[in-house]
Image 1 (tube, rainbow, N blue to C red):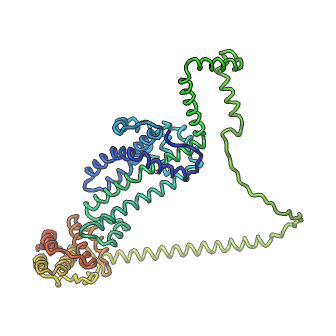
Image 2: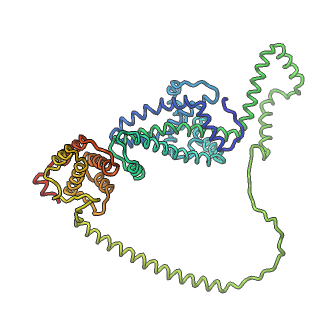
Image 3: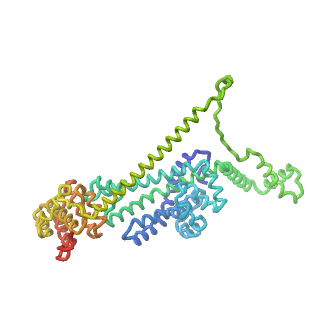
Length: 491
């Protein structure tokens, strides 16, 4: 065994898991990559249009990948030589005998999953024996295992966030950090390409952190078994036995025969052979009857150590006043119940009336705003051919005016088609309304246009004239001229 087992507390055991990854991490990460990367590529290819589903599948399959890492670490820890190809070949058998169905079903949200994994995979326990073993392990180690899950989940999120910030800052056209933070905390994502990049970053973060999670849970399991069963003593006896065996071989058969004869001469007379099998069983039972064998219990109690006060006779108090207090409290409670009922009825009537009034108001369309966050969105403020005017402005180098014209014209066309904006809406509010109501292609175009406008107007980042011209030409295809029928049906 390449690890020295000795009594440690739970936090030292978790730290030992990091050292285990430091010494045997190369093969653990290679085995993880050999199984995780093909499945991740298949999921991303299958859910190409909705990468968030690929991330959810990979997150749900974490117990499957954890078993590969534990298989490598357990073999390496006990001095074996593991080959990644062999691990992959016997993966179906490993999964079938390690309770993978329960791990992906009712035990998926177990917060101490890393501590319980060796019970199912290495000990091959299931059912009642597994539950008994887990209860025994959880007595003093579950708290540390739950904290391990909490800390590494947050570390995985922070690691992915750091990668995304670093990638955003290294791009040639930088996105403002406040826009990135707003998208993170609001949970709003951009086009499919941005979601695909986010899924890849999440997969990288998971691959970096998850082997640490498995290793720390494994060393916590080993430490708990050491406390319960004295594995360190057992390992010392095994080492002593192997040294004696080597010495016996080196000494020759003659010395071994002499030692054997001396041992037989000094041994006490044994009972008949028929009684031999029963003696160890009886002795074990006698030892187990001792209440202190294998049992440890801690009890706390408070004991008063101060001076004892002299006993005094206490007369029974007159409790007539208490009856009057209870009667008064009952009347007050009854009055309070009636008042609460009246308030609840009034509250209900008020909200019903307000709901009816709001429904009546909602039937009438809200007043169309003339200005949104400083932009003039009146239809008469736009030229007849918006795309041609924006192209002309872009060729003249007036990029800000071109993007502003396309921005205002897009808002006007959205309102013409029935999408409502309130007078006090911000850019973020308008963007969310468009994403919820508009067609996907229009929503993606409008998002790109708003990002370019924000980079130019707020980030003071130059936008090329060719990019502005491309926005103008694409505007013509996204917002074709409204025909007579469209105009007649427009609100």
